Length: 234
Image (cartoon, rainbow, N blue to C red):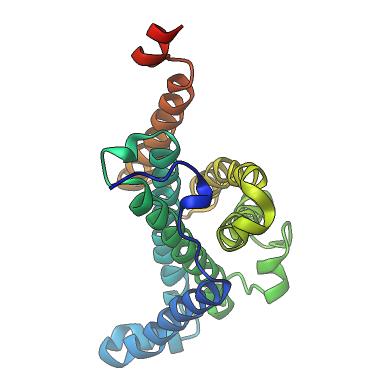
C-alpha cells in the first residue's frame, strides 16, 4: 500500500464527528460519576459529605488520562512527521491515532476541570475554571498554565477538521502549538498537582517529557541528514 505523500491525501474527519466524540466522552465521564456511587458506598458518602474529596480525586485521575492522551497525540504526530511511522504503524494509522487521541484528551481535560465545581475545599466557580488567572484560591499561575494549554489544545484539535480550508501550511503552523501545549500541560501537572512529589508520578513526567524530547531531537536532526540516494545524486 502506497504511503500518502502529503496531508491532503490523508483522511479528514467531519466537524460533526468531532462534536459527537467530545459530547460522548464527556457524557460517559458524567455517567460514570453518577453511577459509580451506587456500587461504591464509600464513594457515595464522600460525594455527599461536608468535604467531598471524591471530586478532587476524579479531577486528578482524569488529569492523568488527559495528559497521557496528549502525550500519545504528540508522539504519533512526531512519528508521522519524522517518517518513523512508515515502518510502524503506517502514516494513515498514525495520523488517525494522532487525531483521535487529541479529541479524547480534550474531552478528559474538560472533565478534569469541570468536575471541580463539586469540590467544596477550593470552591471553584465556572468563571474561575474557564478564565486564565481566575484561580484566585489555588496556585493562580500554575493553574493558568493548564487553562491556556487547554485552549491551545482545543485549537490544535479543531484544526484537524478544517485542514483543507486553512491550507496545509497553516495547518502545520497551528500544529507546532502542540509542543507549547505539551510543555505547559507538563508544567501545570508538576506545579499544580497535589501529588507531584510522589515518585511514581515524577517517573511518569520524566518518561513523558524525555520521550517527547527524544523524538523531537530525532525529527530535527533527521532533516539535516542527507539520504544516501540524494547524496549520491549530488
